Length: 621
Image (cartoon, rainbow, N blue to C red; front, side, top):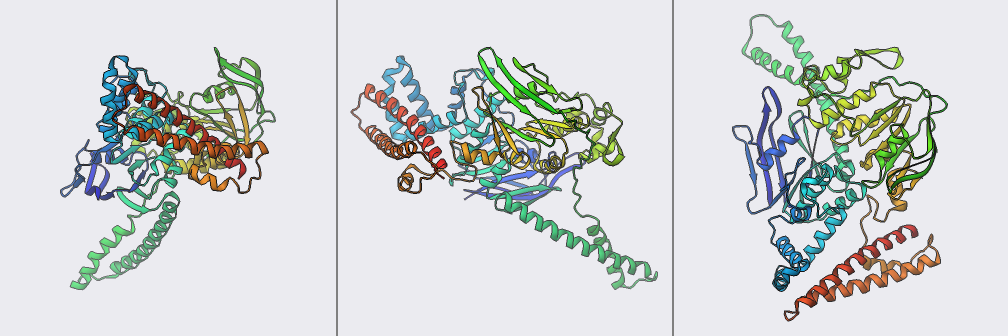
């Protein structure tokens, strides 16, 4: 079944053409990612798809399948600000969700006890018990533990997670997600990745998370130079096929240029009197000329700003601790940074990663211990709160206020305007006010202002948010060659894996673990959930494996693993038993409430036991 058809659709703003006569088709079960550089039309195309903007073009057609429900995750979601977060999550047009809502209201409100039986019957009629469990899972995994808060009291990150939860709870036929991983921590991202792999989901997604593209998507559609190109497969297959396509284009362009030179020579040698055949060849010459000089104009972000040399003493932390009231962020941290260090900082949202950075850079004083910063150490600190660009300034003025000329490697220098061009800001755009830039363009400009300080110790706090994949690839290449020290806080697993050599892991209980390796290696060794490329095994398959090689487990752990399988089987049997009892129409409201509470307890125990089983299986190897 076809869910979406786009044919001969164009969009432009004034003289700027974003895309022209593009086609795209999405069928049931497809998982499609849309990738493009910032400012090339991704948001406009999404607005056309959901009907927020009208398509341009004489023969333009946008056909959305009738009788399917579309869920759209926007960058700026709208809510009923006076509802609680829990009320907002359940405020969706889905009969099962409404049945769950009525049941929970009756269950927890003594004044609605007389409605509990009717609500339970409705749950049974719609077979909505599994949907109740799904809702609780979504709220738990996205850490929406602020359910009683009014929406108007929520932070930006909490609102984004709430919007994502609401869409997943609604269970639409067709999901359209714009940067769904923003404001999620690592555990949330990996859970969402597994959730979206479900075969019955149809998905169109804009994301810069390349592990998401690798593990979830089966098609990647690239918007480039105003045209859409479809690549079948995941992210690695997309890279391979794109490289082949670019190579073929280069070969074809070279052939065309050779033909152009040959034809140009012929035209110049022709006498004034032209035959019909000669005139036709002259007309064809114009076509060849246009093809020869209409090759791909790939902008390339080039960064070769000079960095200052590091001294023998760079940055030292001696037994430092920090707390806010009774909330301990970290304690007893010791570390001496060496030349060329490449560290990642990870931990759940709210664990204190930004506070940790602020203490290391001297912006916050530790409660105990001391931080020593070397005399020659120059920090370049890119952080979320630091992006305070003046909206009423032109792009060129933001840079010239720092310096008219920028020193480069090998004694060279560059004008501010030329440097901006290397950062993908062409001369006309340099005259644009900052307020007119997209989120990604503002971040790119802010990053440039950080690098212009000639730092030798870069600290990047969530640098990948709102940056397109093309910019990320080039930024990574620069950072791989960066001669100074590097600390990265990021939820982008691909970015961390490519650039970091060891991690500081903030656990949320005051500990900072120092792990020698990248993020994927850390997850494989310590995670309670499967690594990125590993699917979750069922508990039933565990029984067949308990007698296999148990190398790596202690005797106590082997016994625990064996008992866990039995306990999981018992819990699953009791869960099935309870579910069957709900079919008994003679049950009293008190019995229904008692069984519902037991079912919720069993579900929580099952999740805990399965997590522990996975942990033991990973230790066993």
